[in-house]
Length: 107
Length: 231
Image 1 (cartoon, rainbow over the protein chains, first blue to last red):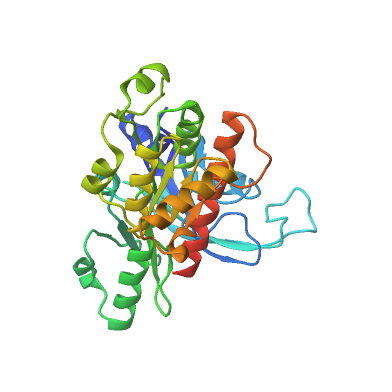
Image 2: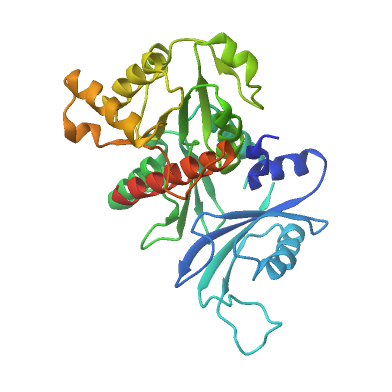
């Protein structure tokens, strides 16, 4: 296997070619100890499958549902994720960081 | 992102070249940056300069005082490996997994025939000749694994005269000392010789070829980031 094939944009290419709609999530800014650096990407398809990562697994679930909205609306948007310690089931970075994610449809 | 941009990025990376996407995160407008002159959309000269330097250094990020985000797609760092040996059988797939591009050279046909390598073509030529042909840049590491001075020494001399980010040579402390003496007699300064990591790899008490491959790869990763941090 060529590991380049795991690069989110290449996964997106394969999905698009097989007729699936996709969105791309990119870490555009970080504060404090966030797990993935600026520029990290994750791709999500209309079935809710994803590849790549924008955190250590803390916010991926939320990013997927936001991405499905972006696929439907075809409108890009920026989402900020903060630390949430109050609600263990809530979305946030347990590591104490803050990240901005840019979500865009692949057209 | 436009689907056509993915193809453009893939094409540039295949040619070992940098490219980038500049996105206005308010409007969603996006431009593909192949050459620095493509940044015509940005009128502010300061921002333009900043974008150019970020593309060259392979750094993604927001451009200050704007709604622009730059995502740089960088070509893979390369490892030139001299020696189709037991360690290479493990080092090659591990390094590829981490994202390095591998150039494996061995002029000894019987070594190539014996050690089967997965997913890499072994160049059956003299290493220094191959290296001079392809060239070494600051995103390249050079590692000798043959234990054969006829192959290792000319490779190391070529590497020492380049701006490669890492040089490693397999061999015990004793072997390494003898190697340094030989290279020193060839007129290479002691300060320059310090660039060679020998015995190669991070000291993790590695014994087996698999473990030595891990220790070498770990050191290459460490040096890659140390040098990137200085830029």
